[in-house]
Length: 199
Image 1 (cartoon, rainbow, N blue to C red):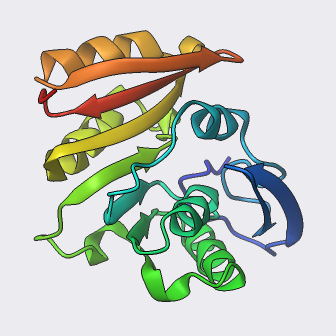
Image 2 (image 1 turned 45 degrees about the vertical axis):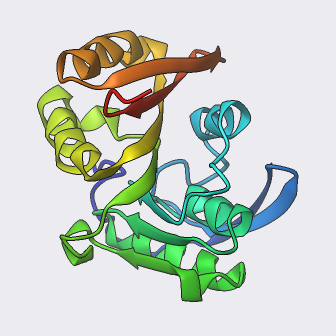
């Protein structure tokens, strides 16, 4: 059985969904074979409810972008910012590219595999509903690859299910030297803000 972080095989079976994010109605094209392809994921909805991007953020990363709801919401919220959207699922990247075009923000978004992000780019903010089901070791490697690329005062916003290890991830991040604040909890999800320990 394929996982949402694997590129699916077979027809995409496109559909449209709508979601209201930060006071704005959005329409997204989704498909089978991507994470939460039938609706806005409840965890992502909690993330939007508990956190908003800083108005001063100019370079942002959507880590594991899926079909692009976080990417599009960030690009619409911050009209002067540039958003990097990365995933390893090729179908998700195709959908995200379609959705940023549909939203009219494609000129301020790079949708790509992780390797295509320039190595000298730092991020004011990283947003993610991280792929917990890849396993703890792979998840830790993923976070330790991207969190160090925060700017000195940058923040990462992560949403994780309580029953999928949100509290243990919180503790692990602290051990890695990060300052972690729980911004809120709802519907079984925790929203964490992570930075490099600078108040």
